[in-house]
Length: 323
Length: 263
Image 1 (cartoon, rainbow over the protein chains, first blue to last red):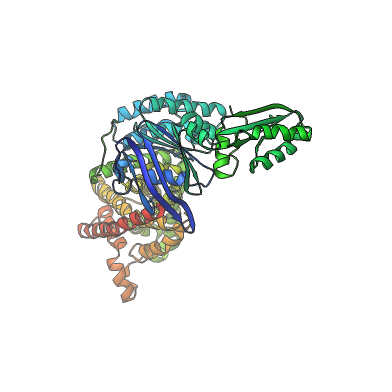
Image 2: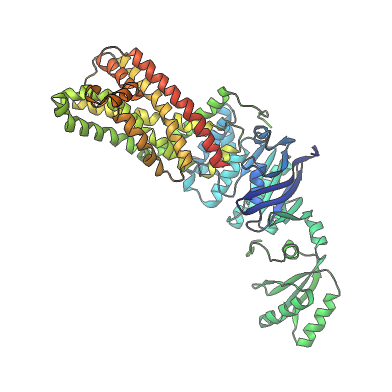
């Protein structure tokens, strides 16, 4: 074990099997203190399993993990004293009101009743839930539940916060709110491990990104490093006539060997490339085919293209029009 | 970090966690009064059924039988009320909030202890309904309020111990409906194979042997002494020892089954 004190969370060689399914197949993770690690991957990649191991909810079959220097297996209680968890499904009691949930957590953490109530009130206000504070959580909308859940995980003022797909299923407004909250927490020194299927989310929030697929880490680095490392650049074409999209896609596939990403709405095709000479080749081929383009460019790839080049698949979740 | 890092949880602290979670379970009951329907209807049905069906044949008249029967019916209703604990936990445990409890620095046993302690409400309700209804039908306590209170406390303590059997089964089965199905096979011989309904005098020897050691018989004798007058201390001690023994066996079993269930 390395016992690196600059790391709030570190894990090495995590393996977890469920019957014949290998959910984690030797995962290493490291989150420096006060930073945000985005764990990116498609559904079923093993992200939630990794979080559950790090939150002491599951025992890994192999490997080890430490949080704040404490072993998740041997010193689980100490680890639990450092972490806050917001699960993929809201981990609050639906029958209790928002305030009752937070006060209960405060009491369980050993806060005096008055202090537990005061913290609950502050958190409800901070998450704009004051008006709904006395209502049963089951009457909350999806966004409100998620905020209540996030509030619940902050009652203990955790050093390390796990956010397991915190914005899945949220509308753009609620999503922006969650992002703003995460940034505030990080400014206050909280370490965050965030799993997401949204490349944009990782790009916006994470200092570091670990890409997981099929229970294995397939890439590690800052968002910019990943963008530079994979393919280096992206080729973008917008044919003048939408009817030319299939033909242009076929040309790109022929040149690069992979299916380009098509944004049907904007009529834009993009694909990661590692050779800038492809641009002139593309111009030639379009010319030969008699296709004109409104837009033709070479630029740093988006994380979508990074994901495509790493996994050979397009983005796990199509982002829609969320800006 | 405002809370100091805990590495060990003392039994006293574990109990405090249990009480906090009992508060949760009582709040839930308060918001969901229909969850008390079973412990409200059951005593009324048992009382009417046994008093008027058997009373005349067994004791000469329903009124006379009621005096003899009520202390034992209290025990039977407590036993049936304990079924609810395992059923409720079996459902509760699959909810997201249990992930939160398990990711917090609290005792592993706290969610189970909380559910059991919270069910004191169910015991109080079932005993209150039973006694009020029995008084309407003509039952009279022959002793004093102090002894009556001792009887009620004994019943509730015994119920708390019996709950661990229910929790254990609730942790083993996948669907909550399987809890009463399994436990009735345990509760029926326990409550009917006793002196609650008839005296053991006419039973065959092997059955009489069981009836005499059955905790339900001891608790019933103690309650008869406390409510109608007579000796009660010896039986109360036996009932208490039985309760502690049941809890000592089933609390660790329930905890182990819970750990296995949640991984």
